[in-house]
Image 1: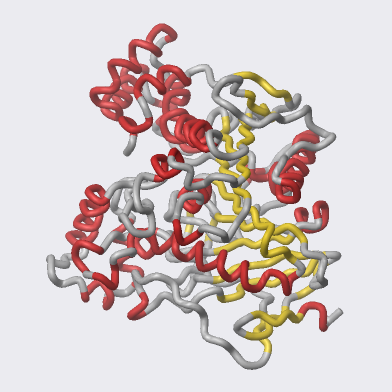
Image 2: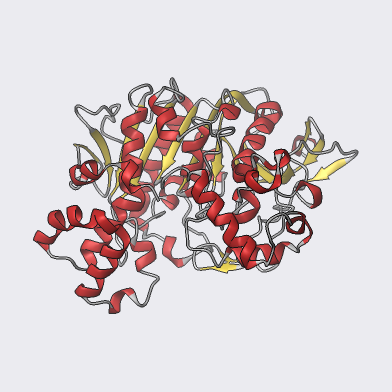
Length: 488
């Protein structure tokens, strides 16, 4: 048994551990530490090592706030030296199991591949699937666009986090066979920023051939343009008192100072960038041109996405209807007239706000990717309607159901009632079936057809799972406004 936990990778031997019937390897380096002169640079292959690497502890998380309501308290467990991955497998034999590579969410500013929910044990035990979870650079370290001020070496700095993900996928392609996996049967899946990452990887030339299937769970808009990226960079430089032409100072500053400066920015500032190189043009346009052609995809969102955020905001519950109206008007500017004409018939209140903002941030973008991708790929669309007792079907609530993980210490938010495990059984098995066959259909679910823009058939996950035609009641008003006009 001891020998079975030792695997020979391209860079040296790694020793994991066996927990029950599953082998686990934690904290395997898939790239050099992106520190010093490698800060803001594309990832480089790790150095080879002699002897046996003890892969029994998770690697450090990417630079991020030490504590949040979602990810918990990471203490000192954050570092620029963060490019590590983890593997779960039933064996190191030649069985060639399907592989699922998880890309965590967190708005591109928080999260890690080992947060409590992301435990591959159940996928390995119940589905005989090899699971890989990864860390990647976050915030300014992963998405600060420096091409305009720092020269050729930093021309792809705005997408270092995505390039880290590609490096991890190359590692999987090269090494996963030794862990009992099939390098030619790889599914990438992610939620929120992880889902946005999946959307970008679907069209990035550098990711081509590294995976065969993809799952997008609640994706925001995929990328920002260079104009916005430059404005963000200038704000961080100003906050750090670094003048134009003094770029080198960014390489000398302690990581903590750069992190603190980036945290002063509004949410959704540090995002993947359409840099013309790693992402040649707007991802949606590349999808339309067939960049993801032939890849089977699951794509979906949750009914009450923003309730995760309004529920944690004590000021929200105190807001009057007039204040809600004013906030929406400020958010949408000239677009508010069209939205107001549509929604005011039912009144502008907190529920309206949740409905509007859920579509704006997550539901509508995710639906549009489904529509565009379905022109050239097999796409299966879902809508997660199952409600938390207080916060409805909030953003990320599907995660314990997908992972079949209910004993997480990450947050009380993700604990579910015993009766909910029946839904978890169905979702978990659908994801396993998809990893194996490129098709999520199982005996436990009604037949789940491919999505097309004529019938718009969608699997609705709830106490009773069923297929509905076009269950997005507000879709047409958002179509009228269009995804392009909504881009933030």
